[in-house]
Length: 363
Image 1 (cartoon, rainbow, N blue to C red):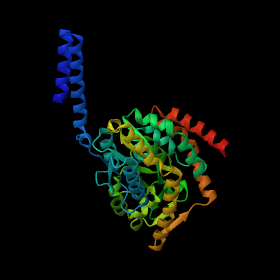
Image 2 (image 1 turned 180 degrees about the vertical axis):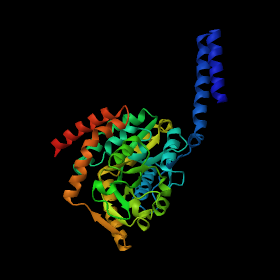
Image 3 (image 1 turned 120 degrees about the vertical axis):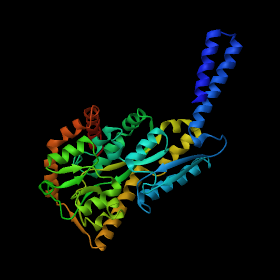
Image 4 (image 1 turned 90 degrees about the vertical axis):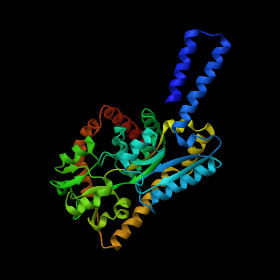
């Protein structure tokens, strides 16, 4: 702050005295140097020139899950692609805070990079919820295609928040973690559930007759055990890895939406990287195509389902008729979902529809 004030004072002083051109050039150089020093000192990663940039990557994913494996792979790729000039440390299992907390810290530059589910990301960019409207996409193939097609739109939305979009990942499709099967909309009527406290999902589940509330991810198991909530929609891998199956042993495979993961970076930090380092990060993320990341998560979900059943848990698969019943019940609620997203919801909904048509032509 003191450096920045000094720079302002120098600028004002030379402007008032109107010195010769040479003096003006000297002053401009001093001001630029002070400004650069202020920028570098604001981020310890850039404090010492010539040393490798050290970045912190936050995720709430539990250790030894497919998501942490993917994070560690991109860390290795970044090190290799940058020739060792970019070092990333992964903090998993919510070591740096909850997803909502680390999202805010990333945006402020206290954490450099983070992996966030679309639901949590929507706390900052509500339009992300347009990608997760319940039973909106006809199948996973259509959902994947639409999400990939909207990459330029998503990148621009996050840039407006001072965040650099690095790439997609995959959280999985939500299952219902409960103590009994939930195979129809009528089954959730009157039940308490946990959803992230944004308007669209809250109103959707309220319209189904449920009683939504917001419970911190780390407290879900306790909330299910004590009866604070009756069920919660969560990705399969998280359900098993976090031990939710021990207190809510019935997994109903609702899988009503794709929950993409967004890899995001504080843009001010990103902009301080050299062009070569920025390109190295892009190459690091591009090493593993999004399609492969999705497949890895979906394959691992089967491993998790097997583990759940082996441990005595129950898995309920919806029939085509049951899924269609869910979709018919949800369809009238889609316009309200998009509207509840906020001012940008309707526009994003239009862009989703355009992407759907493009994907349909591609087959």
